[in-house]
Amino acid sequence: MQTHPDSHATDAPLRLRVNGDEHVVAVPPQTALLHVLRNDLMLNGPKYGCGLGECGACTVLIDGVAARSCVIPVRAVQQREVTTLEGLGTRTCPGPTQQAFIECQAAQCGYCLNGMIMTVEALLRRNPQPTDAALRSELHHNLCRCGTHVEILQAAHRAVTLHAKTHADERAP
Ligand code: FES
Ligand code: FES
Image (cartoon, rainbow, N blue to C red; front, side, top):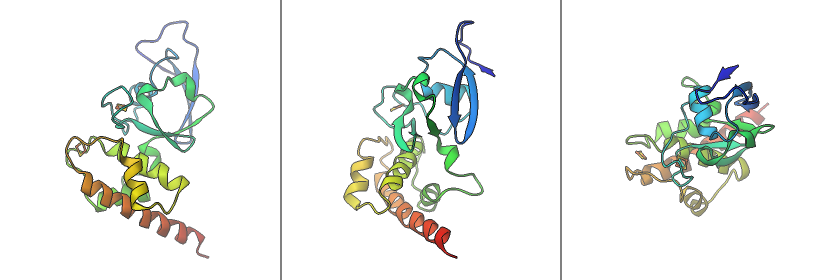
């Protein structure tokens, strides 16, 4: 069991399922999910930006839906499936959304990219063929202070193509 530095003796263990693995953490139940992911589970894909649910840097998937982990208490995700950037693929075998952002070199500082990638991933899971307008709308509330929006949108379109190819390959006999 991993122990949070702010934990108290009375903190009941919380069971989490993250990227397909079971974890037990002893943290105050109101601790933001983002802090548990980064500080207790060492999953540093999600980033701390505003801490207010406004920038998107901390985005994860909860049961496949994009959510801002800086404003979600960890107690709220028990019995739920949490997916972080690390759950989409690996350095040597990135998932299609990750691969699209690599190919398009859609980053300057890269701090916003976790949120961009997880947001696009969530959209493609519920709508595999989004229009340009749908992609723009989905990314509208993710902030990029470097102004890399053109490349990020190109990467989002490339992700649509790569997801379609991946699913076609999976269906091939
Ligand atoms: S850090 Fe969570 S939305 Fe900004
Ligand atoms: S690339 Fe720097 S914040 Fe988006």
